[in-house]
Image (tube, rainbow, N blue to C red):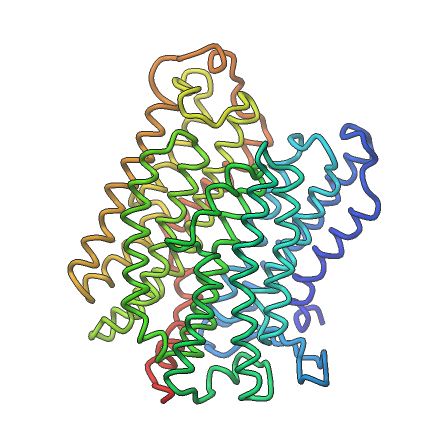
Length: 505
């Protein structure tokens, strides 16, 4: 029975859990039994959601390119809007990533949130449900509702529990992403007027002339480029990350940035393939600027969170590069490789950047500073933590054997098949990524103990060890054995490439 409604369960169970936490609340005392119960409840809801998503993984058929676990109920009859859900090999891994990261975020914020803890955990549970909604919606209007609703919990997480400039950061985040999304709604309405339905699968088969395709692509581009974020609309991300609490940064980097990549692969490419082909040169150029230029910007950062935020933008450049190489590759094999590489990179970046932000969170909880200059010699007082941080830093730089290498390697090989200079510029990230990541590690983790703050540091407690340990295992597992992940995607990506290759003109 549950198998028929598993996607609805994954969406609404954490949302209802979040609403229950909001209603009950934790009183004002963070240490009260009520607050403790709320934390346990939040963890329970997120873990049960994760267990249900494992059922999704086990029941998923890798050989089937069509949508699976489909649910379809009429929602707004007047406009022919359906509550229409389904997943394929592209959206299922992203749902699994979402359900995997959320319990870790709940555990990470266990003792850290000193005010309104029930509301804090409720925001994350509601956000989890809405994000899964985005990845499984197959109706344009439903997709848009989930997409916009997702902004509200994130807006509150940064605006209520953030740092000193939280109001500025949260407003900037909200305005950038909201303005981008309005254009997506306009594109959906135009498609609806042509097709008389908001069904995304109907949109994919709808004949559209080139001029309209170009305009729709640009409308989607604004919405998704802000989310990824691509250069030059990336400036909200460092601000949002610096001010967000650790949990907010983890969710933002690990999952919310993937929405943009998912939007391109789910909407832009199949709905307007000729428009995507027309602008593919622009997309590759913007991706390569993000990879190279933002790499140099990251080198200049004094704040650890800012450095990791800029590194996220550079790594997401690989995602958009892999997706749009398709039209520049003549060989059959390369197109699928670029697309698979982009997908693996999204999952891998979710794990690595989430882990890096958690590491910074551990240090920040102890010293209350994010400045690189305030640290030095952390390995002397926190050897276990230092081992984790160095592992994640190596993964961030794309060391073979870690998940960071797999996606980037695939995209670089696909770029070689398209153009030597694409591959050359993309490969600079291996040098720049290593430069800014290792330079940060050298100044924070190694050397002599530089000041009193570091001399009195306590090593990881059991809670922190569990969170970082689980992420370390995941990063190594995807790096050494990416086959389960790739097999899940392959059939859907092959079908997508066939779909894109057929012109709609």
